[in-house]
Image 1 (cartoon, rainbow, N blue to C red):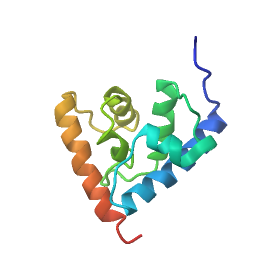
Image 2 (cartoon, one colour; image 1 turned 60 degrees about the vertical axis):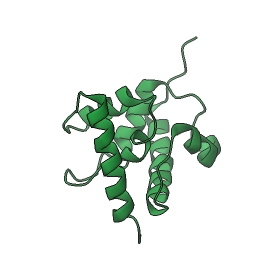
Image 3 (cartoon, helix red, strand yellow; image 1 turned 180 degrees about the vertical axis):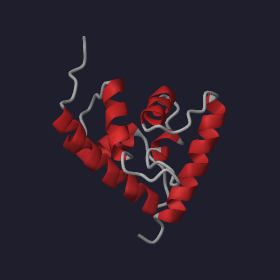
Image 4 (cartoon, rainbow, N blue to C red; image 1 turned 45 degrees about the horizontal axis):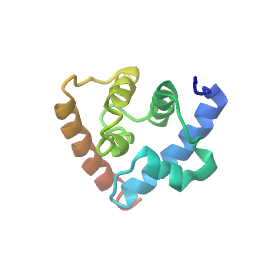
Length: 123
């Protein structure tokens, strides 16, 4: 069965909720996962997101993140071992350097997560 895809308006709505939750996670010096986001956001995050919709949502979350700053989506990528290809696609869509080696990419995401936790510590 094909999962129902999100409209552009729904992607924008979900991205706003996810962005807020990621900023909260950074302030709390933690990382998160899709399942934790679903529990935290309730109906604001559809239970089943098509991988293309995950990419669209996360790309919108970080669409205005300056190039010199780590992506907020690193807070999911650092711990979610099931979505490496999703995050690689997000990075590519945002015009950033894609690391083809999954282990190198995971190390980068973990480093970025630590940097984000420092950036948001007192916000």
